[in-house]
Structure formats: structure tokens, C-alpha cells
Image (cartoon, rainbow, N blue to C red; front, side, top):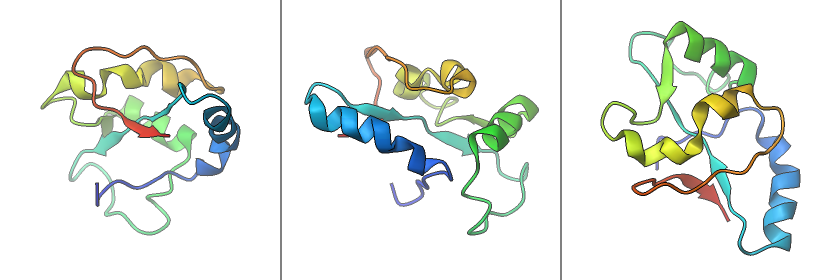
Length: 105
């Protein structure tokens, strides 16, 4: 997607990339979020590189939500957004019918 921007903690993917390289059956799901129009400042080069903590705050404030949650909830259901927001380490995620996650292969 042309409007998909990787967050500021992308450097933390190093261990996940190593796991993908070791096992071809492994994929890394990249959770995706929408920021509600008018609910946050206009994006700048710095603001699109949110930390996970900043994104968590936006989630709890209601200014960010799981990507396309209102249009097609199943699409990113396997992202397990609630777990991801609480986690500090990678965790297994199960595929669910209709899920169309962004992945790193």
C-alpha cells in the first residue's frame, strides 16, 4: 500500500527477520492501524514514526484503531491487536478465515 508507513520501532524486527530466514514456514505479521481523520495532527516525517507506546496511547484515546476495522473486521483479525499492544516480544498468531494481514516473508 502506498499509504502504509512503518513505525519507529522497525529496528526491533531484526530477531523476527532471523527467525523467518531460519524457517520458511514462519511469517511475521505487521499489525496495521488507521488514525482517525481530524483526531490527530496532520502527519509529518517525524509523527509517522510512532513508537509502540505512542500508538498504544492513541489506541486508548480512540484516535487509532485496527486497520479497516469498520469496513472489514476479519481482514486484520489475526493481527491480534490487543495482544500486540501489550506484548514486548513476538508471539504466535493463528490464521483466521478472511484474514489478509501484512506480512514480512
